[in-house]
Structure formats: C-alpha cells, structure tokens
Image 1 (tube, one colour):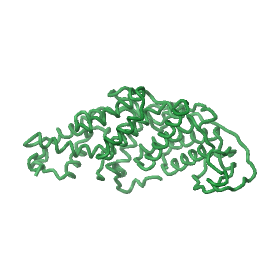
Image 2 (cartoon, helix red, strand yellow):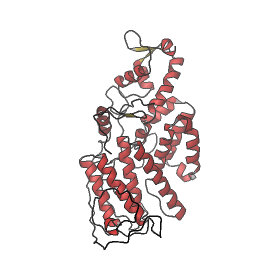
Image 3 (tube, one colour):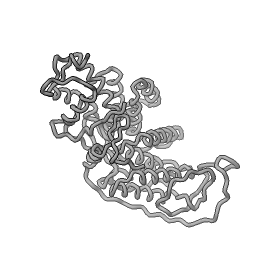
Image 4 (cartoon, helix red, strand yellow):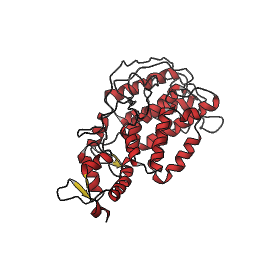
Length: 380
C-alpha cells in the first residue's frame, strides 16, 4: 500500500522531542564506529554529514540513482515528494561536526592483461591485484577479467571511500555516491578483500539508502553485509563494530511484509548467538517484532518514538501499515467520537496536519467541526 509516511521527528505541535542521531559523519564513519545506545533511551543516528568523518587506517587485507525530488513518489509508505525529502534531510542534520581526514595512496600502471572471461579458464573474482590510483571510476558491468590498472588497491580504496563521504556531506548526490560505492565494492570483490574496508563500503551505502528511501539498494547492501558478517564468524575473524546495528536494521526491514513477519524474524533470530541477542540494537528490533506479532500498538509506537540510531527511519517504511491496523482497533474500542488530537498521539504523528491527512486518506468520517472522528460512522 503506497501511502505517505510523514517525517516523524519534525515536531511543532507537542510531539516527542527530536532524537539525537548517530550520523554518517566525520567523528564516527570512516573509522566504522557508532555511539552505543540503550533502548528505549534516545540515541544518536549514524549519518554521512560534515559532523562526522574521521579516517582510521584499516588492515591492508580489508575489504547513488538520484531521486527526482520534484516528482511526487511514494515507495511502500515512504513519501519521496520534495517536501518530504527535505523533512527527511533535516532530520539527519542534528549533530556536531568533526575533522575530515583524507587518505592518500600511490600506485603505478601496469601492462595490458590477458582478457579472460570471468568464470572460465581460471579467471575469477578475487584473483586480481589492482594498481590504479584513480579515486573515482564508474561501476563496470564485467564479463571479462578487467585490467589490473583499472582496479584500485586497498589503500586507494580507503581514500576513495573517504572522498565519497566528503562529497555527500558537501552536497548529497545519490546517483553519484551510489555508483562510486558500487565501484568500490566491485574492486573489493575482484581482489578478494575482507575486513573493515569492505564492511564500511556497504554500511555507508546502506546508510545513505536509508536516508533517501532507496529500498532496492538498501536490500542489496544489507544482504551483502549479512554474508560478510557470517563469513567473518566462520573464519574466526572480527566482525564489523557496527554489525549488531545492521543486523537489527535487517530485522526491522523484514517487518515490511505483514504476512511474513513471524517467518522472517524466526529465521534471522535463529542465526544469532545469545551474545548477539543481548545487544541493545538487536534487543530493540526483537521488541518491535514482538509488539507487531501481538498487535500491541501502544508498545510499538512507544518504541517507534524512541528508536535508536537509524532504526526509526527503517520503521518509517511500514509505520503507516501499522497505523492503519491500530486505527481500526481504536475506532472499535473508543467512541462515539474520537478527538483528532488523541489519534495524533496514539498513532505517533509529529504534526496534526499529518494525522488529519492520514485519516482522510483512510476514509474516516469527521464530525462537523473536523475536530473529531465519528467512530461509529467510520466503522460502517
């Protein structure tokens, strides 16, 4: 159901106070760290912004299609109109700035390689050693083994990733950022890189996809991160310091489809260790899932308002579906008239006009003064 989800934290009418967010920013993104948060206490959201980019050297063996904001688009309940995207952007600009550290790398050209088709005659991803010093290159649709002189080694990829983040801070361009992140991910795969660099490339892509509501890229990057975290565990290597945060995001993302919530959560939860389940991020996602499965809407909306990091923005993708179900329950149990202001609070809207628009789109019957909903007539 493609209904619009309002920007929930731009409150001007008595809504819950705005949360601090751990942003993709100079203090915590290049080093791949985030601020730990306790649920339900509000915590910081990670976002690419001029406030947070600090580079930290990763081990050598480590591993955007711009939305036309002028077009009124809605994706699975997420409003992508110009006004909504502006609101969504403002919600990410709330933390202080830190220093951006750029990394520099060197490399030299090499002679032309033998062109072998990938997957044949021994040519495979993971067998190359790049020599390119270019910080930017387009994503390639490869059928043949590429020239190593077009592939960047790890130290150059670190600087390239830093450049993508810095450009996003200076002027977000999703099409450009997405393509550059995909090319960085591609260079990592072609060279068989592992570790923090690879995780950071996918985590960065996931963060900006969450910010812009790009569900296709978000799904792809979260699947890749799941594989990276699993591979690290199997090999006995350290996982990304942000792994629990993104596992929680994947759990929340799996709740978009109402009929598959139980199945998806059961599969994901079974893959976690007891230590994983005890972390704040994953425990929060589990409580959200439990509230949905039990139709405990009061708990769901309380968790929604206090969601840590970027969890609330994932919940934006399906919150209107939950609001619709909760509205029917409230109309059956309250009456004969339910104040719009009461529904605004019960359904966790930041603005009264957003609540009124939501109710009107659901075809409810208002009282003559438009201040309340006629519960009996709306149920008919």
